[in-house]
Image 1 (cartoon, rainbow, N blue to C red):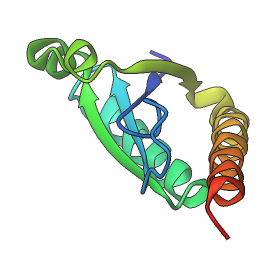
Image 2: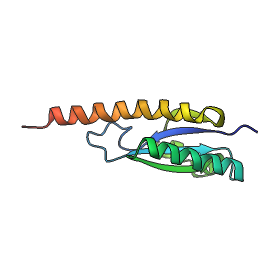
Image 3: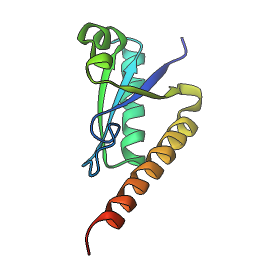
Image 4: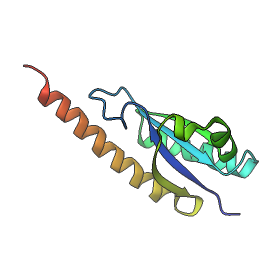
Length: 114
């Protein structure tokens, strides 16, 4: 089976807060078996390397459903990451999020009193 996972954003950064301290991400992977868990761990490491300000949570699909995490956190689907294209998928995700982070920081600095 080809491994893949879905990346969601939640928390203050995605709610439009002016000065978020981090970027909260949730990785939802297929199951708790070895292959799925290892892929999620590898993906988490790669995202963290590209986005040091990210705070990353991992849940299996069953865990996410039983906790009703997506609904409770008002999580926003950001991307799918596949084992075949993990490098490109993570680069694209990181690039989009870094641009948003920098725009938010720039607007915060330009709006602050001198």
